[in-house]
Length: 582
Image 1 (cartoon, rainbow, N blue to C red):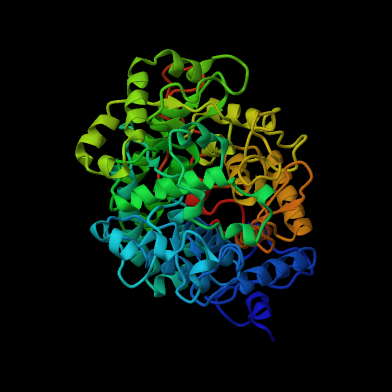
Image 2: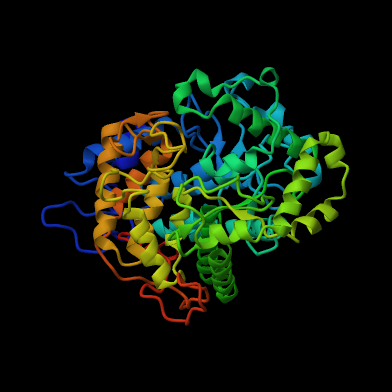
């Protein structure tokens, strides 16, 4: 019996039966049982897809973590591991816990969770930037980088508390016996403190990313304007290993990579100190995941015997800040904010003229123009001159400006739909935008694209400039269900499963045709397929710990009257959607 079969077989005579959905097992189906290492059988209708997804994860398992893809991504990636753990919990809760424990074991002293944890057995030339580029143990010493493991110095979206809570719910007995949550909680709390305090570069309460790789959507058109201020590194100064494993037409350009390398080099050479770089963007998806993770941390705190109310309250304050700073009622979605921007790239790339918050940002440009000029002058200086400035002065200057919204429609602008305290009218508007001409969900597009279908930079095959990704669509499916859009959620779930099957668990796909792009046998695609198979969204009840009320402005831009949202608790907080309702 191979290890994949061992992960998927039914073990008998152990613990309490657990269903794959919130309803009784259908007639004639086997009893579902649940333990620390093995969970439950696929049924007859989904067994083939389930088994093949399990084989992908088994093939990408290293013994302590899961690589996204052995060829293209041979190390451990931060948000990949969070999504992978969410799927692994259905095969082996113990392995899912180990996935997160390995990642958080590489956490820095300042609280950051690095976006890559390097496997020392992988040759340096197998991936760029490699450990000898990041030099974490030396360049990151002041920030508390670990000495015994090599990592990158930047971060990725904070999905980890969500994953930890869902993994706990998969087998609470195992989790408690291993003190899983009590060991994870202080690390996750430190991670959130880092983001909320060290990364509030705009002064409005939201976390900023300081490199496009941190947001996860590496070459999104949202970064084009802020990246245009960055002088690219010379092409001869680095070698791209990614092109050994994929088509250049599907990957970021050499110019993009030159700017990525320049930003990372300057950040490293500045000791990974925050606030001194040329790039800072408040992203709606990154912050929505942080907010959802705050709700998850509240649930974890309650499991450990604390109240959790302060974290719920913080999450609702952050939701209000997200709406205040990134919501455009005229455009019907959230946009990124370029903290150092003035004109947001010189005009509205959508061709529709100035409207809503985007037009307002451009019209109120006196302070932004000043900041843009300062940034331009600073970018022309030598890196060592920029690094010699006092970090405190830089942070003070940055917090005095509002920046500008970036006029590009990204799927990131739809992902706040995962938030339980989002005002009802904003949630309804996001649903309409998702199904409209820019994203085509439920219409011309099989899955929601990463970028505006009508946008000037749309490319159905080039990484995050148009292709559909499984993790963002999985988040949308959860958000649709959370806000009562069960029919649309079920359609999206079915499309995700069909596309995962037909594409060979591709890294990403053409949003129109589902044609596979990037790596095949991609781990988070397989993992989230398992989650969709095991949580088929039959039941509508939610469970939670504290009611949420809305504090934010709604789509009209006027003060919003607090109300009790129609769905009072996050599906992430409770594991709502099916079998993990708790």
